[in-house]
Image (cartoon, rainbow over all chains, first blue to last red):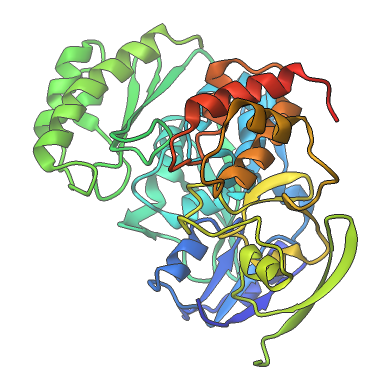
Length: 275
Length: 155
């Protein structure tokens, strides 16, 4: 890595103002587990990093909303989510997923905001949050806006966020009687990056089925959702229609066969999950 | 040194320290310049645990943690000890190391594990230590060592 300027503003608002409106060499850093890797690999060479670690502590809070949902500050670490009683009560699928996510040290510093802003298509968190119907609130010099997590990724490692826009918080709606599951297939160790991830949120009359790590970005499998009452049919519909992107962990035919197997398993897991 | 050099203050293994660092240094860069070699950069990707450092009571991968983030923090490394504790003794007694390269990371993570789970079962140990790699393959003995340390009184 080479030298860069590091600034550590005291507020989220100042942090957003410290980012350039049109300068890709200025980026925010939270836990750093993703961006430092990119810097080490030489794929990202910053002129300035804006550290978020000194911003108001409330941006790391995890709170239950009056409606029974969750309000999670973007700076909440994955470890904080994993062990939060509120998360376990309102969205237990998140805590279950995190147990097999990266490792303890990464979870200790990686933040939920950073996880979403990084837009790595090979991750476990985004498909789960999409299935739960989560939204992010963002802040920039233009003000605040709310974006569905489903609409956040624009492509491979790309989001719809503007260069000077920061994720401030994550909002997860009350799940009521919805039941959720996340199944991850890994081809090396259990905690590895997924070769395929399938998240399911099941209501009485609908299902949200989300694929990760096999497509350009995490996305809903609408063909499977339309057949959700019959897991076998849903899995076939998914495998027949999904546009697979191969990587080092699996070819197109291999991942397509995994989709055929894992969509069915994930739907059955959600049917058997506690609400 | 360039104009990006900054001075940080921190507590390292019980002593107050200051250091002049570059913003692109990670914790391992900082520690090796202070003649501490227990945290080693191995995979350089946060996967192997050889670079484990305890920052404000929390385990982090030193290879991915900017040294600048140590400003104001309390750091503890494998060198932070007076004699062997129950975990280190258990690793020796069970033969849970061969070359020893990964051992500081395993010892530090085991202490964190036992603080959170005083009587861990195999599944808990395997999950907690999944981010530590032992290239000599002493995993069976390491799991045995963790269980032995859990049984012994804390030093």
